[in-house]
Image (tube, rainbow, N blue to C red):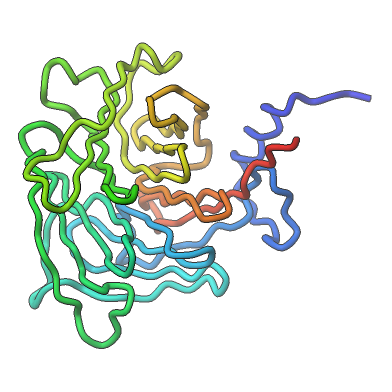
Length: 270
């Protein structure tokens, strides 16, 4: 009997674009679902898990939040901020309690109060300044209670330009602080990295990089746990790790529409 290495199997499964039946998928990292996004989300820039079957997404440029129902494969507008709707370079979204938070590339945070309960009326909102504008270009946001983590796509400080930089911020803090700074030379063979999204589950931080079409997994100290090329993902801009460990990646559309792809969690017992 010929034995195929597990890594080869996983890479082949990541490359395929066929959608398996989620109810029958093995818990081994296989692609189990791919959902096209509406035209308004062609430039999807952020993704966040609400629960096991729901996600939130935001597009670049407009503060409109969409809800994605994985079970029904349906996308709806949840709310928009402001009248008229706020426009900015939005690059990340996350959920903290019932509040929905958005971040711009300049590190400005928008808190949609009770955003998950929004229905016919836009939620009220607050704006916070992390003071990261002169330090880096922010490209991802995730809630890590009681703090928020923001990942930098490009760092402007000379000493940080060749490092993976993640900052932390909490309400009441005047300026975001360095949560993690890891030189790329300490991340295996990675020589260039421009993160485009991050998500955290337990003590594992998952990072996607659109330019490098790469998915990284690191621990809280910045130690590399895994890295792989995302074959079949033209521009991965957002990532959300679901409560069961499955991973959803959002791709911006290029010639076609944007889409999200869900992968079943890897079975640690294999």
